[in-house]
Image 1 (spheres, rainbow, N blue to C red):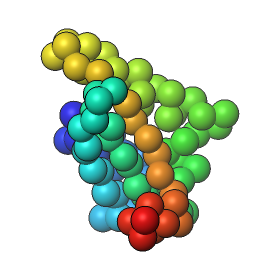
Image 2 (cartoon, rainbow, N blue to C red):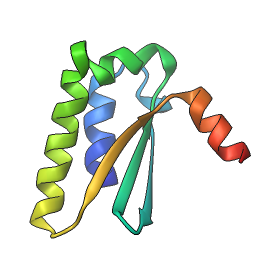
Image 3 (cartoon, rainbow, N blue to C red):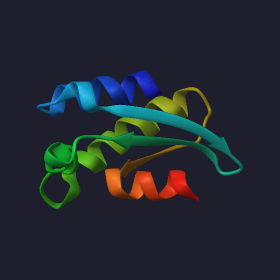
Length: 86
């Protein structure tokens, strides 16, 4: 799933070298975190969150085929730094 999210995100942004995708497993299923350059955040989210919703739909469909539960979170760099400190 991470490769799918990474491929889609890299095709959307201006700085694909700054795209970072991490996957963590938990009780509720798998969580995929997507981090992009702050300048590219709007391109990944889209107007009214339409691109982010579409990305989540595609990942959910792929996960359903594998009988998994996967959620996608788009994380700001500042939030990512704070989470790593904790």
